[in-house]
Image (cartoon, rainbow, N blue to C red; front, side):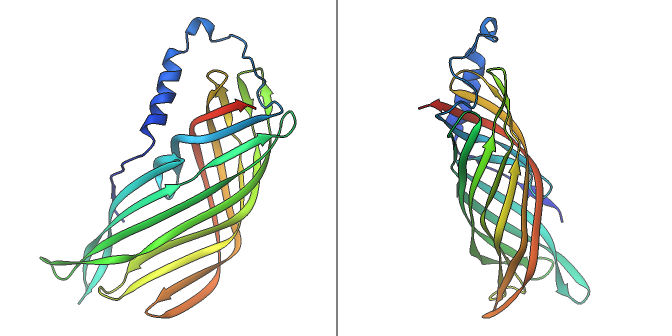
Length: 254
């Protein structure tokens, strides 16, 4: 399946803050001791404010607390009579995904992530070699709530390794048009989600840091439901995804 993507991203302000923070940090003071301990008791951490995510299914994409994504991609469809064509799908996604962690004692953190995303779109279906018809696709929603716990291994006052594990609930939806017109289908995938990350972080100063983290998400023993023309079919399913994320975060001493 060929795919062409065009993305417009939110949180440009946060990205600029990250760039300015890195540029204005004088190299002569790069080894200056910070005033606060990395992972010290009473710290409140907001990570993933803005950055990038890479995985097998989506390639490299923007990740952040708030944003939107515009996609355009094609997929082969059967036109009948041993003839195939290319349907073009247009999709727009908006999301809100705040996350925060608090160090209840030195090194030990508790926190979580809440993510809500909505996708709407349409599909241009070829009628014959020269004509296409456009159909609206059902709006889909993704939802995740993930409490988690972590332990910070501080490497001096600027570097740290922060393994975290979470257990929560996730819902994923997707839609497509089959046969044109009312042939819309919506698939819902939901279940308990297990997540493990291990950010490697560098503190630019007492407030800002950048990190890079492997990310493993597993939804075992879940349920997949497909709705098509008032008919619902449910079956068992599972989901496993590995990716890498990196971006900007804030560390505050309360």
